[in-house]
Image (spheres, rainbow, N blue to C red):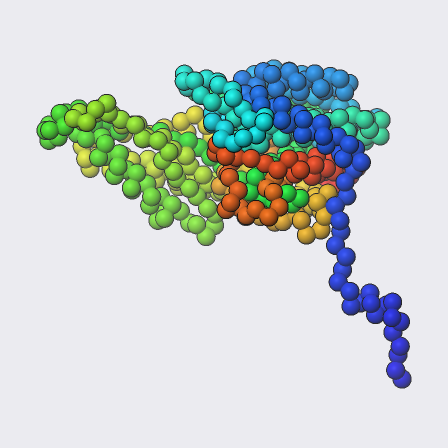
Length: 432
């Protein structure tokens, strides 16, 4: 007997599944123009790490107007606002970083930065070359939307506006590590924390995420090569730290290529600065090298540190020189770790915000984030929101920390929506 399949049913079998479309809250659409306005103001008035005085004042005033309990001066210039919901529930923290970089902006934006600041004793141009201005503006919007729904919130939201994510100035401490030490995750105790980063090389309307190790742990290092000064015409009377430093740099390339088990995780060793000598015919007494180490595995970090010390010491000894090795020199961040259970629970929130097909599992990033200090203490989830214009490729888009860095401001709407959704879904039981 032949069976007749109704046309409607047959069509349902043959048609491709309908992809979920982004769900944007009306409140997010309504506040978007102000998010852009806030972001442009912060962009035009950037402030270096531990110097975010104007930014912090604007944020604190905003949170106070929303009726929150506000604490200022946290880790020097940080701001924390607490929004207590009308119903009992967990405590969720949302974090944005506030600081800019010593970079000269190179574009024709009407709100480009002309600010001059001080870094390491020098006057330097200052620019939001990493998108922290957008992070602050987006979290201010989330704070306003949630404050308007305070009575219905089942729990508490702690808004953390953090200074010095890019690292405190020499001789100072700052950032997430100091905020944790000062108790930002307690009173009330935070159950989970969320953060995001706008990505100028990820297309607008998309989100990238990764469970477990997401961004690298980082330590900076300093190697001082001690030689013996001599006239450049008679090098045999001295010990040349310049030649020794050059050999050390070459030999350091084997730390990753020959000593790191790269099938497990990536590692990077970069010498970013070398300085020594004053003129052409004097062999100096000392050469300084500074650089950065990036690892995604704690055991590999220990191997890299050990090999840097061994190579520097033995290479110097072979030339009759000595070295002083400092690891870390000033900064040390752990791996930014996304709690796998929390990540899995929040994934539907991101898909709802961005739409099916617009949320991507990404590779680990050898960049570093001091959000890692928060995520070491409580379950954390850190993700990436696209800020690159449609039609542009990753290779064409200027990267972060460069004079040409720029974002498509339309990407901030998804950032606000995604942060709003993960906060509300967690408060309502997701991930717990």
